[in-house]
Image (cartoon, rainbow, N blue to C red; front, side, top):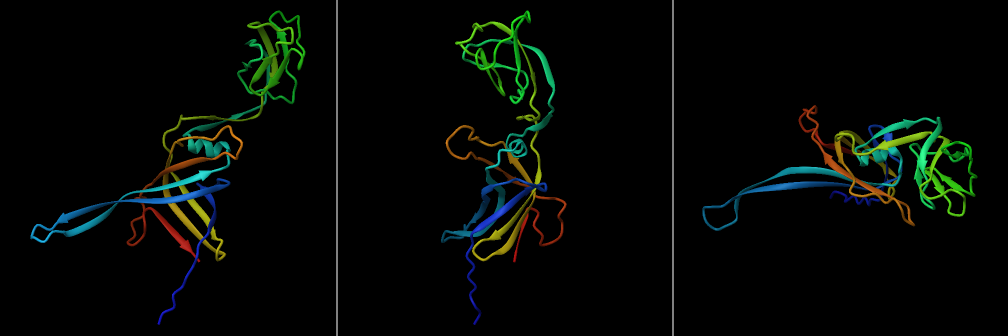
Amino acid sequence: MSETVTESYIGSAIVYIDGRDCGNVSGVKLAIEQETKSLPNYRGGGGYADEVTLIKSVNLSATFYDFNNENLALAMRGKIDVLTAAPVADEAITAVLDGLAQTVQMIDTSIAPVVKNTLGDVTYTLDEDYVVSAAGIRALSAGIITEGQELTVSYTSQAGNALQALTESGKTVGVVIDGINDSTGKPWMLKFYKWKPTPTSGLDLIGDDFGSFDIEGGVLADSSIVASGKSKFFVRSAA
């Protein structure tokens, strides 16, 4: 009599997309949609004479918790521009009392900006006439700057990167899920040859809990795989 082997499963894993570690990812789900074609039995008695089930689509989805630009670019079909720190001299802005006068570049707030009137003969005082943030200058109603006043600001732009959203066509990537069954300690791996993610349906940007966003997309057939008995979609390996 053969022995029945019971193996419980609790999954944890690192998700790699084109070899890049995507950080903290949960809710990885695989959905296979099927289409059944049935031939009715016309000889009497009802039922079907034959039936075949075809794979209609294969979809992969996951929830991402790391808001790095590489993950966001994947979620929003964007590209990443590298921003270098550089001095910006006498950029023109218009004061909005207790509101934001946005600058063209992000401001490096560790370096104090210089705000002047357009003639350049009055220099305004930080934290008395205005405050600064990465997005721009906020003129204070308690100071001497007036509503709608034309000003100039000199600052150092912030180094970093910028995500240009919805600028790229759909990208096809390879996905490897390097996992462990926490119930048994045994390793497992899923390899998806071609995944084409679609733009996310939403981003948690402001809130009192850790943000996340979902990405889903179709798992495409890899036409380069022609060997008999080998999947064109994905393979799962486990110890």
